[in-house]
Image (cartoon, rainbow, N blue to C red; front, side, top):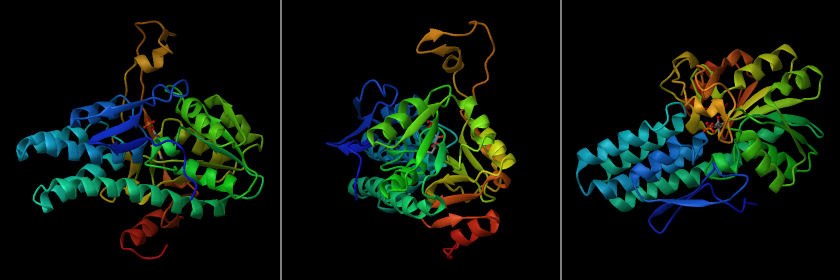
Length: 342
Ligand code: MRU
């Protein structure tokens, strides 16, 4: 199994070491997080980002919270709530915090058991990503051009990647693909992170402004779209980086297959429809400034949602480590929940 030569998150010597993703591609720099507050702040400020990476980091955050709480379960609970609410949209965050907290309670607040649970989340995420990538390449034909949005690669996960994992697997299998990467305004995860990963892996790729995607799709230049997910509801609606919905509308109009790739930890089995997914609205400065330079009148009002929801009607399939979920999504997600074959 070929792995990337960097890790978005890694627990070393009692500290959570993360890549400061705000500095890429200029600098590959690591930061050590030593408290639960450090972890929550790194998630809030997007030093660590991408649904599964956020989940992996938060798992270790719970372990650090347990150490800090020194046996005070009230403090432990408060620190866990702080972690759980550090970003609202990616369900992997709440899922990971709840899972490691449960281990803490079930084990009688046994530190080693809690640390092992956090390790397990990371290990399982890497495995799920490899598995879903192997499954996902079945939707790619030799010579395909693939459009992706945001960053759903090794940086966004505990290793390998989801949508970008499928793309890397296709490249590794000699499928002769070409990738179009949306730059992904305003924080440029596509330009800064996906393009960085693609270049490092030697995958033929073209970076495009987000608004170029529609005409490329119309002109038959895109064979399929594969991107990630931050939360999938039980009817198959998908929350992902802002701009995903717009791509899905154009893809549907021109008959281009549209896939979301995500581990099953991204499915929120408690939520039926995408309209109920909390969408994070971020700081206006992210839109008004570019590289710190003001690009709009200081006083202009800004709306800066970080995500949007793509209705299941616009989705061809959801690639998971357990197989590809096709319509009817509600029935098939229920089968998956019950542990039945897809
Ligand atoms: O705001 P971000 O950078 O955390 O948003 C990331 C995305 O939207 C990804 O597509 C998603 O988390 C999937 S990552 C495997």
